[in-house]
Each structure stands twice: as structure tokens, then as C-alpha cells.
Length: 153
Image (cartoon, rainbow, N blue to C red):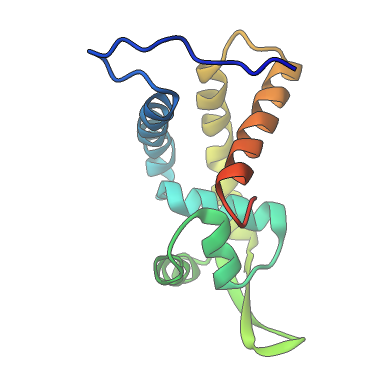
């Protein structure tokens, strides 16, 4: 297999892959804030609710890892989301000191309110890719995350 290389960058312009991914992250985050704000959600809250929907009940530590936040920040966010009725916390039956957090029906409803808008932004990023190409891109991005982190996703 031949390894792909990026084209030579113009030294007068920041054009590396890391730079471009950073720009994408910045623009995407801005667009997602615009999608979620009318529903009263922040992007980290939307991410957390999405993680709960996909993973089920999690501890605060697990949530922090999956949402790429510090545990203290995740805990503060959990308090806000619990006060809004989007999540609920219950003791883990197998371990008394661990609190499991899970999505409520109200949380699922607020999440669903934003899902279509978020999907539209995702589709706008790569309008010409086929479903197979999007899946391949997703797989490669997940691989990049795994290559750069100990925890993986």
C-alpha cells in the first residue's frame, strides 16, 4: 500500500491537515451552536445527550471521557441538565459510590428537536459524498482519534 502524502504547503499560508481540521472544528462548532441555541442547548449538552442516547447510562467519568471534557466540567453540565429534566441520576446497583446518569424522555425530546438541524449541517459539509464514502470518512476519522488517544472512542 502506498502512503498518501499531502501536497506541499505554501509557506506563506497555514495549510497543514491539522490546521484545516482546526478550522473545520471552529466553523462546525459555530454552526452547531446556531442549531442548538433555539432549543436552549449548548453544543456540549447536545453532545452529552447524544452520548447518553447511544450508550445508555454512564458515570460522570465515562461521560467526561466520551464528551472530551474535564470531569469537573462534565459534572457542572450534568447538574444543569438534571435541573432541566433532561437527564436523571441514580445509584449504580453494583457499586454504591458510582452514580449512573441517563437520558430522560424530556432529554430525548429536546435532543430530537436538534437532530435534523445537526444532520443538515453534516450533510452540508460533504454534499457530494455517497453514503459509502461518508461511512469511509467516518471510519478514517475514528481511526485518527484512536491513533492519537489512549482511550479511543
